[in-house]
Length: 384
Image (cartoon, rainbow, N blue to C red; front, side):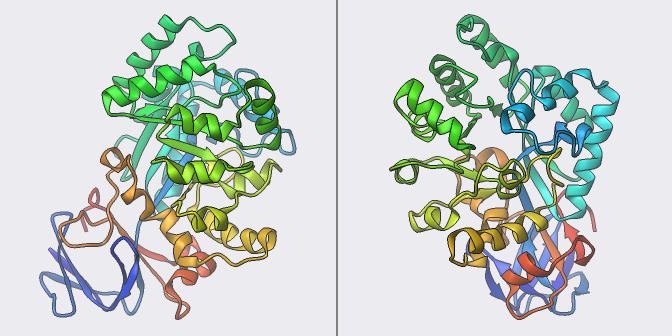
């Protein structure tokens, strides 16, 4: 048992700052208050105590090919089965993949991330490799798998259904690449089977303008519209919405994940975060492909803070941005699987203690922090 004292706590779902103490026993917060003192006293000297980060969209398998293919198009980089990424993954040894993924997870841990949602290639084998790579590390991977049988213009739907069911025995859900690679029938099977088994379904939508145009030409509906109609739990990117796309997402119960650094690296645009927030959408934040970016959420937060001001001539509220990397997931329909906690009594202790450089704790996190400024990472998987 120990007490975190003399800190500025970002408390609850809304990250309200409070000068209170936190008492932790066996990985759980048992009391928060100004007069709460028990066990070992840890004076943090005015540091900020923030919920740990979740990286809500990452391809950690890409760790094997960092910075390869720079300046290529989106399709050349990541479109299955012939993108740079897929060729590299198919040629890499299991040991090299495991070691590179493990190092990226260590990088995430050191920069304050305790949970990540991985979009894992390679079918069942790919899922098992990531499970092996994450073994004994104090980080929780939520693994969404995919299978090569999903792709093509005329897939064998019986094989697809069988592949989905086999994947869902070990994975936390299914996440195909995008509607440009799968048929509506495959999308329907994925969503239905995931719902039956209480697992997560997710898909990339509207990452590029060309994706949207192709979808409108081929199906008479945007990729975002298809994502909403199909009922996927989580939609990723939404960088290039059209018409009433965002309004339709706001009316649904679907999660949205944005990846500003990856979109910038691929030169496909900037997700309209301010518009999403105006509509009541509560986005999540992800770093996307490790081959494009480090999986450091501090870098994602700072880039997002500034690119929104440049592109949309409006400042984003920094507290909303920090929520995207910490507590928005806790209100989502998939947190029953993710199990991410806010800083409240009776919740698991999952928070970071960071240096305070300014009077605004949210800008302090987004605009000032480096990995070296994280004083401690408190995680129910770590005994202090």
